[in-house]
Length: 212
Image (tube, rainbow, N blue to C red; front, side, top):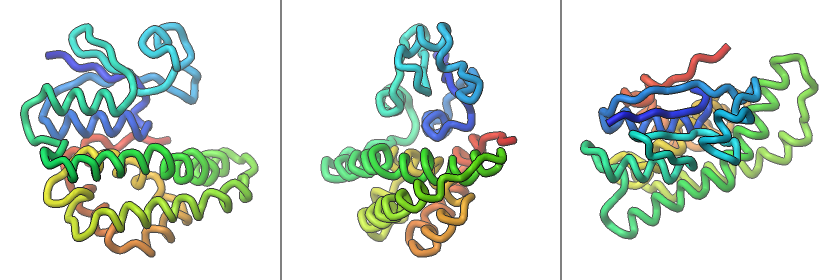
């Protein structure tokens, strides 16, 4: 089987799909599509995904886009550890946490706070402090709710790693790089301990993006 991921290694969702493949022990190829250079808007990528988002994916000619579709497909077809709980309530909790990351956490932590602090500021631009101030309580609420839902852990949905863990890990890896993220994590010791556990997994270490 041949798996190809199209997207930049620095994308959190590209990293999630890579982590799924690493957890399954499946080889794959990453074809870089640099968002910062506008390559996602070029005809080659739009042929894979007309919406121009990443990642796009190919499995022996079967094309997919949308991270949740890709990750779920891989979990079903590949041997190795099951990343979706069989028990309905646990599966629902996993889906709920994925939804919180997609709908609330990502926009506040990455699209607003991280990009303003780590990209706009680092490149000499004017940081939008008002946008950061507005996003901060949203980010903190999302993290507090995920911590509450994870309960005793050790993983977000109980005793085994699931797609929920792989959804959140790349987001927090970036968010922890900025002061707002560091403060938010310091206030969430359960989530901070979870991050140390997920960061110790080979799937996390092997997908660390090359920045700069």
